[in-house]
Image 1 (tube, one colour):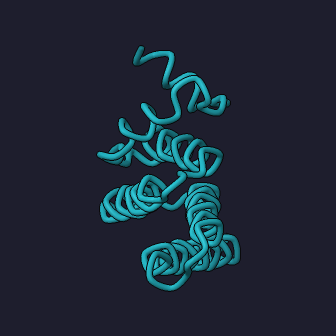
Image 2 (cartoon, helix red, strand yellow):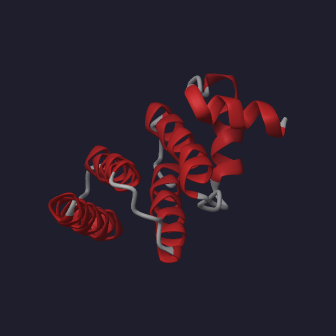
Length: 138
């Protein structure tokens, strides 16, 4: 029984560290990389790290909500600022923002409505929980 507790605490610590590292990379991505795709990879890493934290039964920290919203906001604004915004990347960021809101109680980024207007009918399909959440709110 004690072994199980030690393994659980160890897994929780690793998951917590993974979230912190993913947030750190995503926060510096706008300055660290000129490539929008690399920035998106950092957002995907945040998603995987948060999911792993839930799997390890970690309770999301309050600051995770704020940072999650900030990193998605930063990415969406970056794509919107492009001369020709990459709609596929914007659609994926939209889906991540909605999933982060649903799964981790993060706020939706302010720029999401502008992104959705730009995406219009080209918005990628939402899947799973994100789709169910959207259907509840519309």
